[in-house]
Image 1 (cartoon, rainbow over the protein chains, first blue to last red):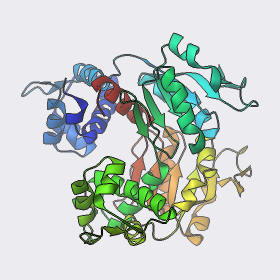
Image 2: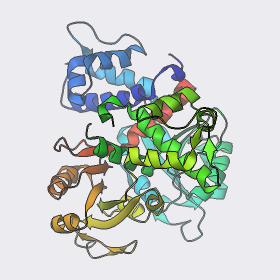
Image 3: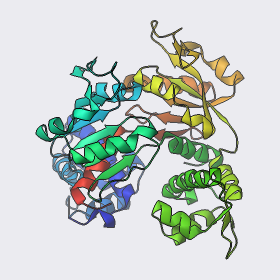
Length: 211
Length: 211
């Protein structure tokens, strides 16, 4: 497989979108599909669809298109979701609760299995069938349970401390909702969701009048 | 200004990042800055920084760099945040509550001013200093208060209905957390936050071992 550095971020995002669409079609019994139809439904060109997939190998055959179920398997392999991922959520405020209770992750291979907070009145609380644990005590639990992803839903001022603790506990990837860019070793990955940035994308599009 | 269709999405996201960094430096009294320093701090090349800005005009001068405050003003104008935006949040579950209570939007020009839900036990509740209103009755309030952005934090099955209602009330942009792509007229814009897609970006990076 190519190094991630060679592959545009936009390709990875599109792979997720292709996957969602293929899963949808697969549930409806669809067996084969063309790059043109995938593109049309998601508003990309068929060239774009084929180019994105070509980074990872040769899929599909001329005149037949892609086998839906096979391509789902291949894209999951590329994205790393051909296995289950256990997820810890840190910071059980409103956002943390929303994430803990989100059942749709599970279908996509992500299972929230542990909740952490540092507030005495939150520790011990039952949320979405789990007991909130003390953030200072999570290392052993995380290692033993092979949790490798964490969601950071704590205030900006707490985020770096949480990341430091979790990196020690061998967390490899963070979905970060704190509006900072935490520092971590090179083999630890972050996807930061900055809601202000998303709002700005929206106002930019409204102002420039085109999708 | 160029049509949005000519400008890569990644440029718009980077403009937000430049803006955050420039605001940070401005608060610390910084007056001028070079494209190289902006790039270095955010891990882009200086060519990238200059290219992104060139879409919108000529900023900065050789040997001096950019005037920080001036460039902040220009980027805000490009992104449409040289004015305030009033925001409605629809769906006052945990996610809606988290968004309603988020104070950091305000500094960036986004103010949550109205909350809506359809559940009888939620309507009338006080959340973050606002009273949750009935989603069926919002048209007049939205028009009178010049609310043009909405956050969709309702279940997927409710999202299209909410969008239809809000488009009638002249909402122009949606930050959508429901895992569907709602249908709307061409002058209505969506930024969809699909948490599964973000998790997949993370597992892709972990699997391919490079930032």
